[in-house]
Amino acid sequence: MKNKFLFITVLSFLLIAAGVLSTIAMANANTVQVKAEVLNVRGGPGLAFDVTAQVRKNEILNVIDEENKWYKVRLSNGQSGYVASWLVENVDVSASSNSLATVTSDGGLNVRSKASTNSSVLGTLKAGDQVTVTSQSNGWTQIQYQGKSAWVNSSYIKMQESATKESTSNLQTVTIRSDGTNIRSGAGRNTNTIEKADSGTVYNIEGVQGDWYQVKTASGEDGYVANWVVDVSNSKTQSAPKSKTTSLAEATIVIDPGHGGNDPGAKGKNGTVEKKATLKTAKAVAKRLEQSGAKVILTRDSDEYISLKERAKIAEKYNADAFISIHFDSLEDTSDTSVNGQTTYYHKNKDQSLADSINASLKSNINSKNRGTRDGDFYVLRENTQPSVLLELGYLSSTIDEAKMNSNGFREEVANSIYEGLGNYFGN
Image (cartoon, rainbow, N blue to C red; front, side):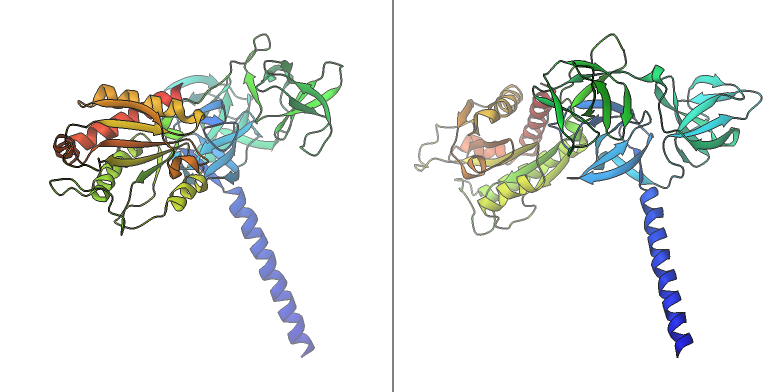
């Protein structure tokens, strides 16, 4: 009995140890490859954060955290940032970042732009040259080369020990983004604030510790600033230009087809039901935005009832960069068919720029009366925590508008207009 108990104890320990090792192996293999041609790396998990770097298609990134459908990744230069999870894909990669390797090829080693012999040659390394390795995959090694990510054949290098400190010749400057930024006594949020820095203040980087840059304060003390609150320059003499949101491809957009289920909405003289028209239009918009790379969520994709509260909560749940509710208007006196056209509503002052941008595109792309942007006290706008607008895309009480809203051509015009309007909104 005693031997049996000892056997079970040892077996249990081995199973637990195997599970721990398996978990560690899975964590180390948490690596993704860029799908987009150019992918912005941001200071935080969302479009509200500034662009801190860019990576190219097929580059390998090591994932160190995940938040709100965004991956926090480690870049080849040791910095970290966030990328949209839907613009990358998981890959099976070995080797960790910040490792050193020595070139062993006597005849020189080509440095290529991609992991392929068909890609362009960026330069040549000679035997004995040392390189910093980002990752390895399918016989290719991703390295840092002249400030950029590049690839070499893994057969002609030899891996060495981990590199934990950057050469001082590669250190850059950081520019503070916002007034009142904390410069801390240590590399962590729980350390004391020793200085407050205003927007535009420039510091030389004295060192790197995790996600924090070591800098010198005005009084000469060693201080630390988080890498997600600064812009980095590749020059010691020039401050970093302030980044801005530029890409619809990274955005999360919630499209809200009005009404649904036991709430049919308005009805046109020729039988058009609002809940059906809004759903068809919303799906056309979603398709167009998805083609641009945006992440799109429909509050409903079938004829079902969704409460106004739940619609607003969906935008909050996905931390949407824009919420667009689609409707068709109607007059109580349906005998008056003279009133027609589109109206764009917003409620909060901060959302007016979104409304103006989308409405401008609707006005220039759709051949019908444009009634402009207006303040509308609608629940899905008033109670929405995210940037939000409501579009009345025509009047069901107008036979002219009703005929238009039932055509595929009109839906495509609306979809293209919203795509263009969002592009301009994020670009400015």
